[in-house]
Structure formats: structure tokens, C-alpha cells
Amino acid sequence: MAAGANVVIIGIAARNGTPVSFWEFTRYGVVVTAMTLVVSWVYVWLRYFAF
Image 1: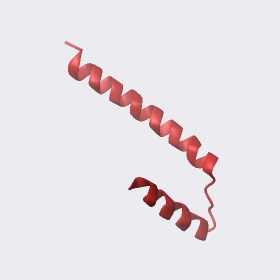
Image 2: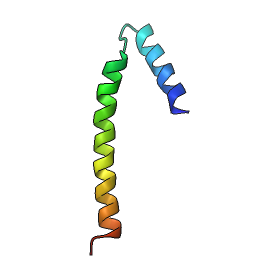
Image 3: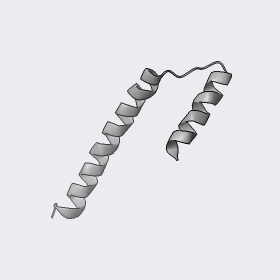
Image 4: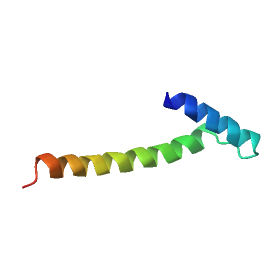
């Protein structure tokens, strides 16, 4: 489901003169994924292992 939304947004960006390359998308995606994993890991650790 999210892949379809990504295709639509990339199409809209290209139509408006701001094309997004695969590597640009990947670079931002890796950063967001890493941050989400860290925040999730901290939450799980605090929720189940701390105190």
C-alpha cells in the first residue's frame, strides 16, 4: 500500500519539476529507518526491561 503512495508522490514531484531519484529517496529512507529503529528499541527496552 505504501509503495503505491510513493509512486504517486514521485510522479507529482516530477510533474512539478522536482524529480526524485532512487538514490535520493534511499538516502532519506535509510536515515528515517535508522531513527525509527533506535526510537523503537529505546521504547521496547524501557517498556519491558527497565525497572
